[in-house]
Amino acid sequence: MQEIIETTRQELKKNIDEKTLQSSQRFFKEKIQLYGVKTAVVRKISTDVFKSLDLKTKTDIFELCEILFQSGILEESFVAYHWSYSVRKQYEATDIDLFATWIDSYINNWASCDTFCNHTVGELLERYPDQIRHLKDWALSNNRWMRRAAAVSLIVPARRGKFQEDIFEIADILLTDQDDMVQKGYGWMLKVTSGFYQDEVFRYVMENKTIMPRTALRYAIEKMPKAQKIEAMKR
Image (cartoon, rainbow, N blue to C red; front, side):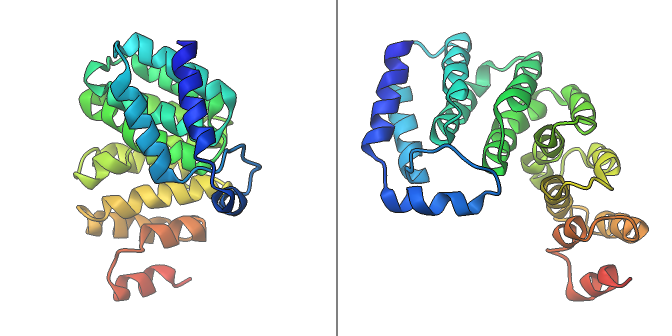
């Protein structure tokens, strides 16, 4: 295990780009630990190392992911997200508990939250729809990233028109959340949902616009026709 981790870290360190290192922090309000490796390069390193592995059982891969998460370094977390998604055919419903632990323990920025939740968590939910109930508990968490995860885990399924009822239930829970990262997350969820259910999302926004934070509202209506945007933005 440790040899695989060291190989991955050496490859990342060999590809440090000073410009990326200097510019990346401006995308985050939080202080982020990172090497400064371009996203496309991180993806290639992740893919190449994964292909070289002799064993690709879920247990082994999740153990590697745990080690990478513990470093707190952004690029290592991206590798972990990629590897966790690469064994998606082996997912079991109960893996949602481990994913929740990873979010609560290791995720500390929007990029990590969205990368992991859009793909790894979203895939599990599509395979095991009954596990969506956990997202409603996440939406009540004191951890801002758990609350954001409750929304952004549904982005990819929402693009396929899935989970409409659950999406509005989660939006209800997060509706007046004061954290801008959460507002952007559930606003994004509603925006994507509007691709299939524009009338329903518009109706939801109009019914709640007096209490919905403006950040969430703007995200939700972003893809709507101009006339609806104007109507939604009226006080």
